[in-house]
Structure formats: structure tokens, C-alpha cells
Length: 219
Image (cartoon, rainbow, N blue to C red; front, top):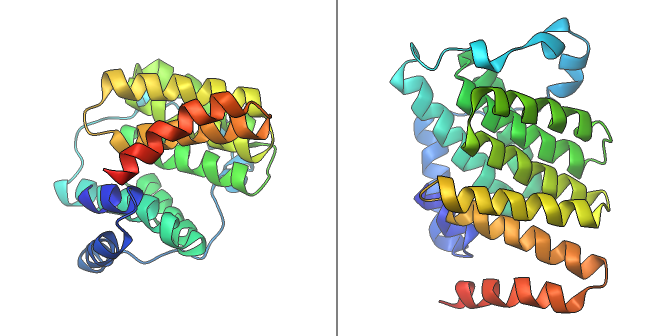
């Protein structure tokens, strides 16, 4: 988590060695495969998978720790190198599917929504809606915030400015009230909203969002 926060706040030289050491220590191997939603669409499991029925218990601590490291590495690394970050995301997603712990699986699939949007895949919206329903069924506000934030970024990259703003602000509010230590996620949500305002020509709103972020980075 410290590595992710360092990279996310612009301290690349401090965060990079920590990320590399974490990946090395846990034996993570970045995957060159493509995202999983395409495979899910070809299997009944994608339409019938019920996250509410998955157990939060019975998972080895070592597996959960490796999943958390994979998440941190994929999120932090993509800020340094997009292709390497995507490869680590796929490794994280494969591991989350194998372990089956529901909160971490929803977290990984939220990342896949982001990847779909970045690749211009219009089916990100179907994936997004499905995961929102699953997070609501589990009554997991943290998962809901992560998925909503991923949807905001996908809306931004596909030109849906107003929706990006709405989703980013909703996710930021949920993170602020429901998760301690979500500084980076909140920062990213506000950045997404600022870029969306800028792209739709609302420069005052963009400045209102961006200037506090600049001040935070300078501190």
C-alpha cells in the first residue's frame, strides 16, 4: 500500500523499488494473456456467477497476501508503464479467479472494467452494470466504490463526460465515508472529474477540481 501511495503521489523513484521488490518476493509473473471478460461471455458462468454466494472464509493468508500485492503492483505499475501495468493486472485477475475470495475478485474485475474502457470496448458498460449489481447484493460499499470509479474512468476514455463526472463524484464520496486509507482512490476520482469537466469545456469547474489536487501534490 505504501508503494502504491508513493507512486500515486508522484514519488516514482521511491515507489518503484518497493513495487519491484514486492513482485519479486511473491513470485508474481505478469501475464501476456488478454482480459477475462471475453472468455466469460463465452461461458454460462459469466451470466450466472453469484458473488453473494462466494465465501469470505477458508482462504489461506498467503493467497490473500499475494492477491493484495498483485493489486498494489498492478495499480502502481500502470502509472509508470501502461503495458507492464496491464500485464500485472491480468496476473492479478487470474489469481483472483483462482482464489475466489469475493471482495478481491470484485476488486480485480473492477480493474477489468477499466481496461475494457481504455481499449475502447463498448461492452465495458455491460460488465460495469453486472458488477454493480453484484456489489449491491453483497452490500459491499468498498467494492461498489471501486467499480463506480472504474466506470468513471471508462466513461472518460469513451467521451461520456457527464457520466464520468457523476460516477467519479459518487465513487469519491463513497471512498471518503467508508474506507480509511483510500487517499489515492479519492485523488484519482477527483482527477477523473477534473479531466471530464475540461473536455466538456467547463474550465471553471475543471479548475475547481484540479487546483486542490495540485496543492496536495506540492505538499
